[in-house]
Image (tube, rainbow, N blue to C red):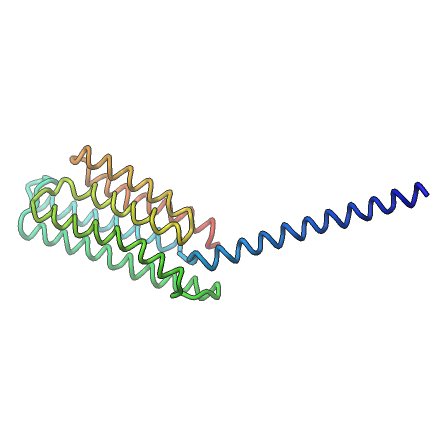
Length: 219
């Protein structure tokens, strides 16, 4: 009788443990499905790396333009130099966006995910609102000739855009956003170092972030 009792006890325990494990597994699968339905997770780490490289190339071109045509100062832009720098900045943004779209689309297809759905729409809206507002504000500052403040403002608004968008994508994005905000605040306090902090934020940090995301999610 005692043997039967212990046999029944062990069978019951095994069944109970297996049921718990199955229950936890089901909960985990449901959680993953909910995350996938509410977040756009096909962002490419490689696009972050390339965006950082584009930023470094653009910064080098801008530095050369200013050194060559503005008497060796990074603080004063005049006429042709200013507009050439704006063209370089626009080119960096254009190639970064195009590269991001191409690589993200390829990753989404590989993962059998839609590139344009409710989650990607929410991601885009939350990213663009602070970015567009920041871009307009930077143009106002530039039109007033306060060039030293633009690097800090660009970093801060870009960081805010990343933090806002992280709610609808990979949560790791917010850490890059916090870093950009901190660098932007430092650049605002020390405008003389704005150019180099811009290089650090948009160039080096993008490469570091993109590499981390690539090895964490893309491989």
